[in-house]
Length: 348
Image 1 (tube, helix red, strand yellow):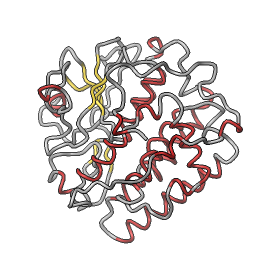
Image 2 (cartoon, rainbow, N blue to C red):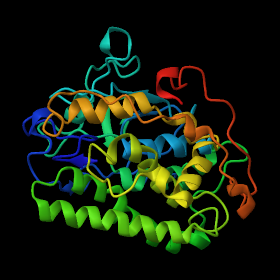
Image 3 (cartoon, rainbow, N blue to C red):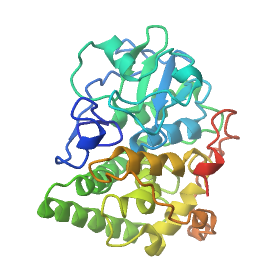
């Protein structure tokens, strides 16, 4: 999420919040692509308590990491900091914490960890970000690789009963499905929302719904995208689907139909939402306030819509009839750790 125009993972040096929607969207590669690995080959070995995961609950790319961390039981091994959903022109800020500072890193802005790593670095300040606590330096903002490493490199610190989110035998298929979802859905809604011309918007809009129709057909007779358990592919699709009616349908003009109007995808999304580790990480209040109040170029009034009605997320989905084993041979995660609960304002 090292983007010049995305409201989640924004480059705060390109005109601030008012610039959103005034230039075409282009997602850049992560500038800081070091990896935290079991053998420490990039200089960053997996070590319980050494790193801090900085996220915004508004951001779909950061939400991937939040869900993976929870499913795998890494909450204590990889402590998490949650930023204010409303960033200012200096980037994501820790104004939800006492005195406006992260209590562990001692900084007011995530940008400070970026500067500690590389003063004057190019690109934006994005989440998710992994910060080395002893040095205060950013380690990585590579949102594409991060969750794969949590599933594989951090295995020795997984909870007992943690699912295999990236099973080796299915990786080629997971990668293929995830690439299609990324291009047309995860990224497509942004290309539509930040389009500066009718043709550019129409092409992105068409791509979003063409892929959603294909996914709907794929999921009509199978509970999960790849295999019979939850994998990385499901996490990556879910983080866009859960935001679809709340922000992408109206705010990003992806309005051919709502998620609730596709019986298969709506049931699939509800199934995941009601699975421990998914819905208990979602904060609709943060999501809506971020998109509608930060993207001033798209929504200059900064008015946050009161809808949609969220109660449907808790309705029965019937997907159990398709079989599948959500956690494979494992088990669901335990209760959400104290202090990480989503406030009532963000839940159905």
